[in-house]
Length: 435
Image (cartoon, rainbow, N blue to C red; front, side, top):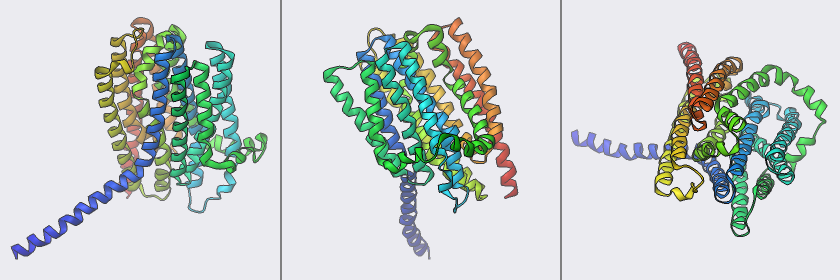
């Protein structure tokens, strides 16, 4: 009998091993495609900023970094106003009338044009009219492409979003290869972003672009009004306050000390841009999953998705920290040039690592809170942390040094994380107890 039990155990072990391998494969299939394509986009943006560090002046480095912050902010606005409501709308039920949500597309076009005008105004003020033209187009096209990715994820077609990312990144790499031989100023870099966005739109097809003109803007805004009242207004408050919380140092340092003072901060942020992009991309991937689970009352599945999401982000954060340490101390010439202080950049990287860690823990809880449509409590937490962040960042910038403004952002994000954590724990207690 002992031999038989041993034999059965030995026979069972391969099955357990196969199950583990299958689970790992499923996990990679779930996050691998989105993470890999988003990481490639991050690497292409990293390459753009590395190119700028070695080919542009300090003020131009700060200007480019600030424009990229604005474009990143546009992604958050898109998520609040169109991407999140659209995803929730088409995933509430299995038989949702998806054609009935076409009004989101013209609304997205209005948002995209608005961002383009803001980018153009900033580039006009800090660079040149031609730079304004290029970054105006880049700002507009970036949001058209971003909603295309959100649309693909909302309809559970992540491969289209991945192909868009790969095409976008490939176009940037091709542009940089040309620029290393011919040279490029900030206007040329804007042109690269325009070309990359156009190429990145190809996987979505002409039908996707036509839907942006399917109805007039007036009719679209009228159809959108209930979405604004029920969801987007509170989500927008959350996004604006979150932006003021997470990027207040970008705006305050640039305003009070100028683009040159922002340059070391921008280089520190540069190391963790891959994590930020992956956070945004995986949010688009996981929000439909969590929304569907909550709508079906499967709270255990929603909480499991949140836990797996957190684990994936923490793994990405750790890998990024290791890479940042290797580059900063092993190959500093890749990032730094004589006009940038190594000590200031190292301080910025350490503070950005702490900030990124808090964001990795906070984001999955925030996405689950959105999936259960608790927009108002989430906005309240964001507003509270926003006030803390603006005061802390301003005081640190004026009283200590611009580089330490990042510490003020860390403090505000901790306040927000703890607030969302309390909301998350309360929801878990209430619903798991019922289950």
